[in-house]
Structures are given as C-alpha cells and as structure tokens.
Length: 473
Image 1 (cartoon, rainbow, N blue to C red):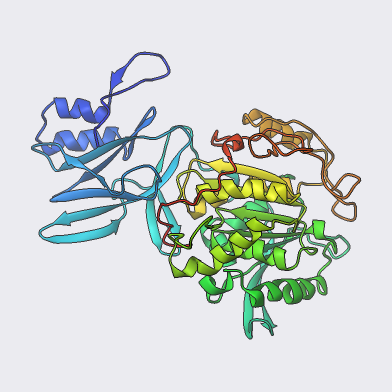
Image 2: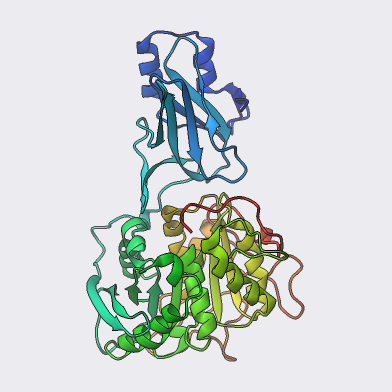
C-alpha cells in the first residue's frame, strides 16, 4: 500500500507525516527510534491518517483486521537500517478498529499478536485485540464504573427447561432501589455472559438508570448452549424464551405484563435469535434491539458464502424477507460500516419498515465486536426504555451531539401508562428513518449516529454480500 506523505490539519497548512519525517532523516541508531516512539504513541494518529508500527527482528510483518474495503493483511515496510516497520492508512474521523499482527521470522510465523506498543486492548470470547482509535473517538464515559452510581444487583439463576431439555442458567439484573410495588420493563439479552464480560452491560445499566436516562428495568442475561444451533431460528430456544422464561420471571417479579414492557436483544447470531423468537411469538415482545444481526440472505441460488452454519439462518431470513410481517412495535438496529454484515443489515431496514414496524437504524465506524455493541447501548436503551420524564433532556443531549431531533414526546410512566400515543404505536419519532425514497403513506424522519454515519445511507439493497463472514457469527 502506498503510504500517504502529508496530512491536512484544521489550520489549513500541510505537514508531513511523522513516519515520513523519520524516514527522511536516515536514522539507524536505536536511541533515535526510542525517542520517536516515546513522542508518538502507537498507532500514530495524525488527522485522517493512522500509522501502524512494529519494532523488532522480522522477515515480514502484517496487520490483521476486519475492515471491509481494506486489504487483509496490510503489509508493513521496514525503514532501512532500522528494526522499525510501518504502514499508513486513511482512517475516517470517529473510527475505531481492532487489529493484531502476524510476524514471520526465522522460518516461523506468529499469528494474532497484540501490539506491544499499544496499551489499548479489547477483549472477546476468542482473545484480545489491540485498538486503533481515530481522531474523534473516545470511550464513552457512561461505559466506565462511576463511584457515584448506585449499583444494581446481579443474581445467578437457573431454570429447568422442557423445551431445551436441560437446566438453563442465566444472570438476573435488578436495578438499584428495586421495590415490589413498582412495575418494571424486561430486557432479555442473548449471549448474556458475553455482554456482561465484554460489553460492560451491568455498568452501562447502572449508569444510565442512575443518571435518569433509562427507566429502571429487569434484565435476564442468557448464555447459549449450542449457540450456532440454538440461535439459528431454533424452535426449542424460542419456546424456552417465550413460554418458559418470560412466565417464570413474570410470576416472581413485578414486571409490566404487556408487549411494550418486553424487549429482546442480541448481537450477531443473537440478533437472529431475537428476531426469530419474535417471529414465532409475534404478540409477546414490543421491541427488538438488534446489533450487527447475522441476517444473511440470498436472492437466487444458495451460495451465501457463510458456510453450513448459516444455512438455517439464510432459510429463515429468505422466508421473512419474502413475507415480512409485524412482530414488534419497534426495532432498534445497528451495524458497523466496517463489517461484512453491513449490506444485509441495511437491507433489513426496509424489510422491517415495510412490515409496519418503527425502525431506528444507526451505523457506526466500527466492526463486528463487543465494544462497538457496547457503545450503541445508550442510544438504544434510551430509545426503547426512556426514563419516566420529559424527553427534552435526552433531546438536548442528542442535539449537542449533532443528532437531529424532529419530534418531542413525553416518556412513559413505566408503573402503568403505555409508552405509545393513542392508536397503539408510537408516532413517527425523532431519528427514525425509512429507506431512501420512503414508503407510501409513511413519513420520514432523520437519523444520524454518534460516529457521523447517517442512516439515510441505509439503502434497501437486495444484493447478497460476497465478503467472507466474521469468524464468530
């Protein structure tokens, strides 16, 4: 890849990238490289450019990533006379990218190595990756522990399931100041242990509830059994959630006994599990929270590119797209623009809209990973379960972040009043957007994400992506 030589700061003057200034000096002593790396933490972020660097003896160095549109791997070049390797790419403002190195030396190859020069690390079920944060990205403060926040309670639970033919464990979240005389909405979270471990879900709920942005809620965090089977439009799993888990919780906790008080949530295959459960039980859940759903489909033939594990998913999504129907009142949907699933997720926006559901669709300059899904939770949960107060405070916050608000309405009293205006469904609210061109008889709103990717790009494309799917569906 050709390395850019200049960057354009906001002041208007052009300056050369730090790595190119170092190359021009023709340095060969270790002290010069030491000083350079001290002054320029890795990866180097300069305006719209990111430079990845590796230091050490090697025959070849590569950056591994999952950014659709960039070569994978990215091959680094060594500065002659040194042990410093580098590659520079253009990285749009607000981007966040996870990466690793592959190193070839002495006839051997080390794979999936985190960047030893970069302390920023993200964790997931299959290990850790280094994080490259572009200009404009920062870890949201509400994802971090706050000593002022009163924590909720997380209880280990278990339920003997006839549908699954096993004991099903889960974690039950009760908000701070939980009392039996109130009524609480329910959030059912697929891949619950991973959301707790890698997406700071408990901390996020504690903070957003404490700050009065999200209504106090009860959450059931479900771990999967055989994930690739149970989450791929699996009737026993759907029956467990709808006919066993929800009645079990409703019989023991003061929950809102209406669809608008229940939400299914999941990412990747968990998004498929959420949607397929709602399709099988369309009168039970009022909201869906779908993050990077693995909504792979085909328009012709059966070559979907996802391998055998996606076969039942493709069959389900093809059938639903062929005959879409309303299975919830509203759908919050998000996807990273750098992941292979962006095309099917954009296509599903129009499918949900045509089925009569209100859709809030947000794109982020990120990939298929847990911190991307974590960073979307505030926007999602304040839309699905806003606190019982005027929404003007949240509107002002969104306006300050550059998110256009087209309509204000009063949030629900979760102790008993429906969140929906008269008529049984919400009005065309702020930030909801139909596919380009709209749908006859339905008005358009405006949507934008915290990473400046507008949902107006959500074309109702019916094409099947050809890019290989992520390693963990």
